[in-house]
Amino acid sequence: MTTVGVRRSRRLGRGGVRRLVPLAAVASAGALLLTACGGGSDSGGTSKSLTFWISTVPGQDAGWKKMVAQYKKETGVAVKLVNIPYDGYTTKLHNAAQANSLPDVAAVPALDPIWSNKLIDLSSIANNKTNKINGNFVAKDSSGKVLSIPSDVTASGMFINKSLFEKAGVEYPTSPDKTWTWDEFIKAADKVREKTDAKYSLTFDQSPSRLRAMVYEMGGKYVHADDSGKFSVDDATKKAVNTFVGWNDDKTMPKSVWTSGADPSAMFQSGDVVAYWSGVWQVPAFADSIKKFEWASVPTPAQPVQASDVNSGGMTVGFNNNADAAKAATKFLSWLYEPAHYKALCEASGFLPVESGLNPEYPFKSEAAQAAFKLYNEEIPLYDPISGYFNSAQTNWVLKGKSLTEDPTKTELGKAINGQQSADKALQNIVDGYNQQVGG
Image (cartoon, rainbow, N blue to C red; front, side, top):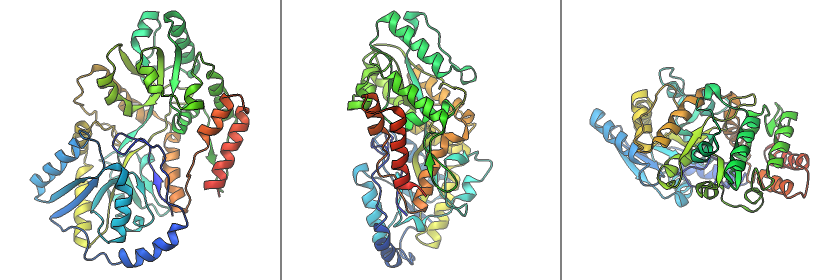
């Protein structure tokens, strides 16, 4: 096995899919597991005292602090919260496994083979119908054991410069029940650009995740594996990617984002861009940083599929250090994911919940931010199951001892946008890269 990374988040860093532990490390890790992690009888907490590791920026740890304090008050069990800087977090977990000193509970950015065999089965929590946890986003092995449950989820989404739309007199949808297609969105955004002299119609994160979301919405599967593990692309994907490359004409979209790494968020926040294809993690920042114009989140386009690319904001796990602590950790996590408690966590930390039907009330003063989170919470239950494909695929690669150490999407499509190769050739190179790294 190798590690599997989660999508970038403000809590776990901004790196996208992480560099992952090489397969060659597994053999040596196995010996360490037998010695350092074998018995585990002397490591970990007790039935009345647990350790919980997280890695989060100041402010977004508010929910975790609130919940562990409430848990101690209700049960008498102390949960010591340890907030570790992201840059050293995975190494610290790795070293803790070798030293037989893992925490009892953790919110982690990735699974690691050196400790994945010590994970508590969270099936009783994930499969509890009362919790209404979206099963598309939990990590399972082939036997059905639930290895982790998201602390929250992240989803791609569209932001618009509301002031420019209103200045141009162009309407836009506000409900996911009556959303627009990508063709309709581009037509509207181009019209706004032309009427307001904005510089670009759209900026689009240089991200495979954002591209997958768009392709899913256009009816494609992007780079998708069959039952044998061989990757390919379907005709709908080819059409969607050719359309995307064509948008990069320095009018509808700037070429510089996907060819030379220009910052699409900064472009949008300048006020000179009509719309921005990014995701929910931008909302708290925009609530504070955008002052010169009004912005809004709008429903994701559906052409014809209502979808996104949804990932774990963090992966909540429990470690089987010893019998008493493992039982106590399971009880704590069961309590945490009870809807009322989990809702409180999401509200305090600004999380997008993995559980449906909660309707969190967030503390944002910004009306745009409040409306954005409301929209995302309305949209997620409508997303096609393909929205969670890549999130699940990464776990499957881990369990097969494989990893996508470098997604070729950005490099290959950058070449296509620059005119160095066709979009179809770029897709073939991307498929070849996937098959080489994680195929079979």
